[in-house]
Every structure is written in structure tokens, then in C-alpha cells.
Length: 469
Image (cartoon, rainbow, N blue to C red; front, side):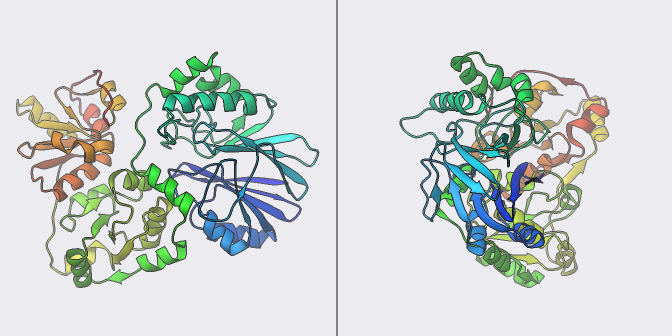
């Protein structure tokens, strides 16, 4: 028996490959199927099952393409309803794989169809559980993604408590817990950087499992839970109903355009220009009306999903040369399938063409300190999240959280000369680019963010604000 965790850091997502006696199963696959097909071919294994722990909200699964290419059966737990063929397993059902078996444990709470797959080894002993978003390392799944008219998040948190205590916690301490996500995912609030653990250790260290009553559990799980990103329900729908093949999406997006052709498409097809270079490169020069979300400086896909509202939005790319397919892949992972082309040769092509270039002024934190010391106190706009802001900020700074800026645009004032910062200089450039594209002229980006601000010796203070949404 082989069990392999396939972890993707930029999404904080874990898929799994299990093999026994020439038969294989893959759990919660990502959108691109190539790596899985290659793995199967190299190992001479036949894919029998594609297990889905639930309807994922934070990424589009590769279950449909993988099933079409391999003939494998897509398995969901009880109550799952889809617009494509699946095996809807019953609670307690045994599904054999080579010399081992999977037992289906229906564990609603994160979503109503959420299920955990218990893997029994060749001796019939409980070996590990693939918990999806039911149980994480250090956390449990958020219970606010499947709310219907008759259900509240308190109801779902109660279901989650019952699932954990009736299906998972009765298992042996030695059972290994393999979750669908790790630290950095918005599917929980307190996930560990570790990506697997024993159930016994989780009993001792997971805050949610230490609750002595259902009421205490519900209060703990819901406390401080920020609203989910806007793309979550849209990705869940795609996972239920289907989507274009990954190969079609890549083929359409890998469309190299000259500066002239790029400009024509941008001006005639209501496209969004997405610039994925580094933050410093962007502020020093970009195509007017571009939005910056850097590929390599932060969680690219989740920021795209948080800030670009329409999954069907036509997108033109400006990337570092060679990054085009990687960007298209990461966009497709979260359901943005409408990339229509990229600037061949990158931003240098645009510069060499002599076309208009925009810039965002940047300031070193030491320069900001000089301004403050001289009594020329600027309007500081802090793009960090509430807990970061409360932990320390420049006195008098305004806090508008990047995550929710689209729903809080009325808080921005076009007459103010904003000096924008975040923690390290990534989110502030994203916010600056969005404001610039919406016609804000007086913008200054503070390089290095709050880290540079404190190193420069600028006075900071702490406070308590309520969550934005």
C-alpha cells in the first residue's frame, strides 16, 4: 500500500494518491490532470476511484477531466447531487482498492455532503482518515458555507460537532489525519503549518476538540470567523455542475499578442488587464488600468478569487516571460477560465512600442518617518486585516481591509493623498492598482510595509476595531 500526499503550497491544498496491488485512488485532485496521469503511467497503476470529500469552494477540482481520461469512478458521500455521473456512497459503505479498503464516513458540518474516507490496511486495521475540510491539523472546517433558508451557521457547527464525536473521535489515537488544507487556507481560521498528524495528538492540541460540550464547540468555532471570499460559492457550483476542460482553457489563454493587438483587445472587448510581475516592477511602470496581483509574492489564486468578482471576466495577462501558462493554470484552479491572451515579450514589449505607461509613486519607510517628524503627517491607509491592524499601526491611520475593498469603496476619498501600506508591500500594491484603475490619482505606496515602518522607528499604537465585511 502506498499513500502519498500531494501538497500545493500556493493554495494550501492537499490531494492524495493511494495505491494497492495495481489499483489507485486519488482524493480531491486539482484542476490540472497531467501530473496524476503521469504518476499513474510511471507506476503502472489503474485509477479506480476519484474520491471527493465535499463540494470544494476554494478551488475547482479535476474530478471531471480525470474521470474522462481514465474511466475512474467519481465518488461523493451521501446527499451529494451533481449534474454528472457519480457514485453517491452510503454512510458506512466499504469500497475495495487492491488489498485495502475505504470506509465512507458521512461527516456533515462544513458542508452537508462532507465525508471522511477511512483507509483500512491489508490487515483490516484502521490506518488513516482523509478528512477533507471536516478536521484540519489544529482546526476544523468553517460551518458557514452551506447555509440554506432553514439552517444557520450554528446548526451546521452543531452537525460538525456530532460528526467529529460520533464518526472520527471514536477511532484509535494512532490513526493518521490527512486533511484537504493547511495553513493559509480560508477554509478554517487556525490551521497548523503541519499537513498531517495523528488523531491522538489532535485530541490534545486542536482547540476545537478540547470543547467539553456542543455549545462550547459552537462558540469556539464561530468566534472570530471572517466572512468567506466571494468566489467560494461560485467554485462550489462549478464543482457540482461541471466546467470546460482544462486543456481548452489553456489553449485559449496561450494566445500571444503584439502590443498593438493587445491594446485593441483591451479597448474593444471589456477585458481586465492582470499584471502578475513583482510589486516593485509594477509600480515603476505598467499599462494604464492594469490590476496588479503578483504571481510569486503572495497567494495569487486566492487574491484573484477575492478581488475579481466575475469568474467569466475576460482577462489579458502581462507576465514575466515564461510565466504565461503557470498563470493560466493558477487562474483555472479557482474557476477563472476566460484568459484570452497575453502580451508577447512581457511589459518590455509595451515599453518598446512607445505606448502610454502609468506609474505609482513609492516611498521608503524612512522617508515617511522624515515627513512625520517634520510635522507633515500624511493620510496613511493600512490595507491589512483587522487583527493585524489591532496588533499595531501608525497612529491615526485609516484601516480599509484589502479583502473587502470592493464592498467598501464608499470609504475611500478621492480628495485624499493616500500613503498605502500593508505588512510587507504586496497587498498595498494590489490596493493601489485597483484604486488607480478606478480613477484615484493621489496614491503613494510605502515600500516594505509595516515591517519597514517599525524598523524605521515610526511610532505605532494598538487598538481594537470590529471586523469589516
